[in-house]
Length: 621
Image (cartoon, rainbow, N blue to C red; front, top):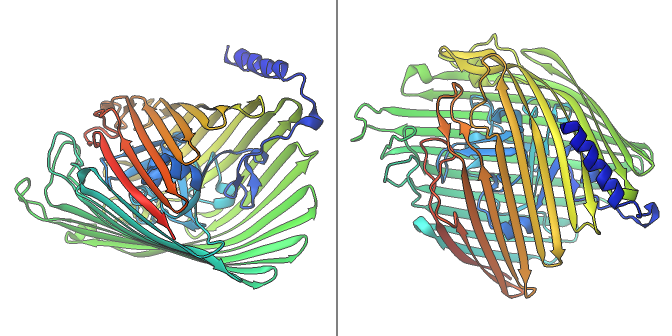
């Protein structure tokens, strides 16, 4: 029945567009995206399912953190344990949070000392200020990025300076004594471009756990810079650096308060890259990146628990050298190949000797090959191959092929992907003295997806429908006191995106994701993955100076534990943001989060703020 429905929909779209001539059609190729192929391509020209959120969209939505923006992306589910610094897991198409690689300006941010080598602790502290765009690529990306990219890639690109130098200052205040101040400078002079941003966010916060009243405060200081210099006419040197220092109060666990439990999260991420066009058919990039994440937790005896005596800390480092080459032998082919060397290192310690993890280092070398074929300006085929040589697990060979086909006469786009992936165990899983096991093997996956998109009436209406299917083998999970390769899992479902622009100043967007998950060994559903989630985004521009954005998110019920005995209820959340440009250089804005003051829990037992009000101003000079 489902196949018949898909065929009928396809026939309908062909019939209503039967009078369109190919030579009259200019297909909207979407935004430029880098993460899907490691080269600049339009979204419509890659077979992968992608979402690009631009700086203009970020400004209209008025969100504070990257994780809040990701909630509105189809195929992405977010679970945060409380607010203001709460531990956050991001699942792409039902995969584990550690199956998503997070990059900022090409720097890998996943923490080698996190149990599953994810970016869970970092998402809550990653603010959208000074971000140019966010790229989300769903589906297997291991052929280009290696381990950690089984489920997909989230690529964050910061702003690049251009034009006359300018300052930008922002102030915002609101509920729970929350204040944010930002000062930024950007521009370009002759061969140099520069961008600097300094931000501070602090709040009294709300209680992390439900049914308690003690507020858990939060502080965040973030510095970001990006520099570029044209050494020669066809050669550039680029440098990027981001530093975040966050301190946050948190509680023992679900429904259990703690008045003096404190966590620190500090990350420094930097990259230097040299780009050069050798000639008209060959260019290359050589880069070195470094990321260091420090985490510390402190909990002294208190009235709730007189036996508390926690003081633990962890340090994880990632160093990466990469040399990428792009060759254009003919105008319908782009060959990309690259060589990588990665070294991850980490250690941990604490008051209890059982928490000590001696310094460990693991190396990995890899090479990747990809060819983008462009045939007849409508068919795009991209096969890829990767070979990794891991210090512990030996040789891993991965494959992927993706395709996109544009039917210009009907403004229809067909797409499909198939790929394999692997996920190496983290240093924590391998070497922790109590929970680790050096005999662990990597997670493995096979994934495919296919779908089609359609545009109507000069792109005023569009929709995209995608079916996805992932098989995971040897997934690492915690069981009986240690980490083990015990899980085989399957996730599959449908992603639907729609957009309607009835008039120039009004845009209505909607998305729906259906995800079915199963642990093949136990028959249980995977925890914290909602089967149904949906979103509606309405944006209205008025008087050429004002903007109003209304975002509605629905998250369906989901199991909160792997045993499927605890369930988190479904909820709907509405946010409203408005801004107005009083002059060309001065803007006022305000927003209401959780407009209808709904009481809900993303993770069972952890609280979220009720209706919260914020307002501020931004000046450019």
